[in-house]
Image 1 (cartoon, helix red, strand yellow):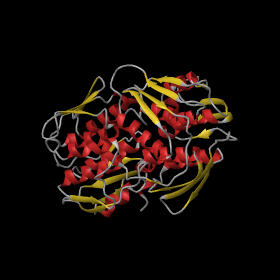
Image 2 (tube, one colour):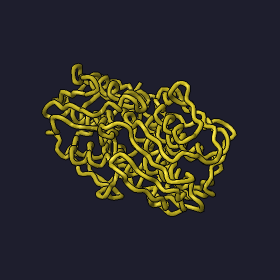
Image 3 (spheres, helix red, strand yellow):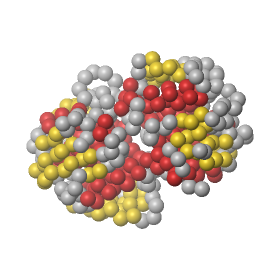
Image 4 (cartoon, helix red, strand yellow):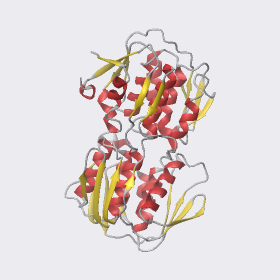
Length: 422
């Protein structure tokens, strides 16, 4: 049974601890960073452990359209060959709802001698990109986005003249990462500064970007906690191993906690550098999670933690999560609606915070059809509720293909029964 092709699927609570070893796919965040940087490098790079998903396929397809050679060697290895330049594609780059690819390629298109249109699906066309466009314009790049969302049109000359820019990172750290990865390809060193004085959400993803850049020969200096000077080194091809996805791992950690099981990973996660890996320490405290959880630095783990909070011994308030409103969907609203579908009054939106009352039991629920909002993380997190609560039905289960196509097979491999739901 191909779960990805079904309109709905029901999860049957196993009634026993889940035990086994699980394969977690490669990191989406690191895969897309490595793909882009390897495409900008001179020579041949071999990327191992890559994630094969909708998001990474969109990135690879777009780079091929820009003249980069990308050859597959098995399911998780890519050989990327480039000459240090990107070429104007013959058609607009369609990136679906892949936010990472859209933002990274919008910046990289500033290196093209010609016109590039970066576009996406109806959901992507609602996701703000104005701060990135403003930062590119400060570098002398002709970039426009009339709706402040994709499509973005970039009219490049093959290089950019600017040596300093500022970015409003309030909505996404990906804007910063996009500019940082562009910067080594400038004519001179580029100073990249973050506007404002508030906390930088998902700061760990900027660190991932800088680490990947360094592996491909880039050099940078930290001028202060909000400013980097990136040298005009270009990139040099190298082989790069991608670690397993920590965001995906949160579902496995939570499944272990919810069922009292013992789950391990076929590739160890102990040394993960990804921000969502810190969710592991929070999950270990279930069913006595902290009364307040700050999700600012582990944003993609919040849906997982919110489901755990539903079964927690006391209420949990999630703070620092305003950016979840501009992800693949409004995740704060999607979580509140879904949790209240499981049990009326279970969740409240308090401004941009989410309060989850806790105390949900394993008593059978009437069929609770969860609207996933076509968001992979909403689908996978609410599937976890079905491990404890009967009657949980996930609408559009195929949306998990965005980052974790094998998610349903992982559950089935652990003995979880999945049923076709009408």
